[in-house]
Image: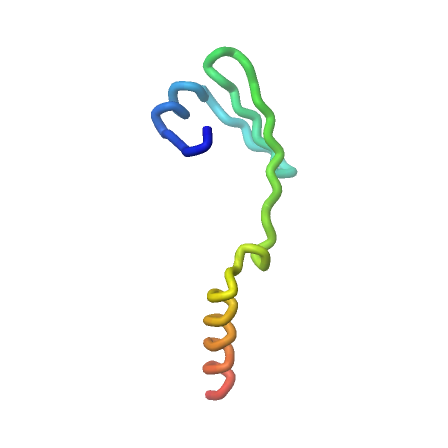
Length: 65
């Protein structure tokens, strides 16, 4: 799915098992399984330039107290 649809998800997925190492095993209603290993993105990579600027301003403001 390109866009999450809860009704379709519930129709297709019977259960999900989660394991160490960011491994998920989806058990589908048609009897098949699908294994996914996902990467946890670095928090640093998710910050926009605007978010960085606002954090810098807050840090400077708190440091001047």
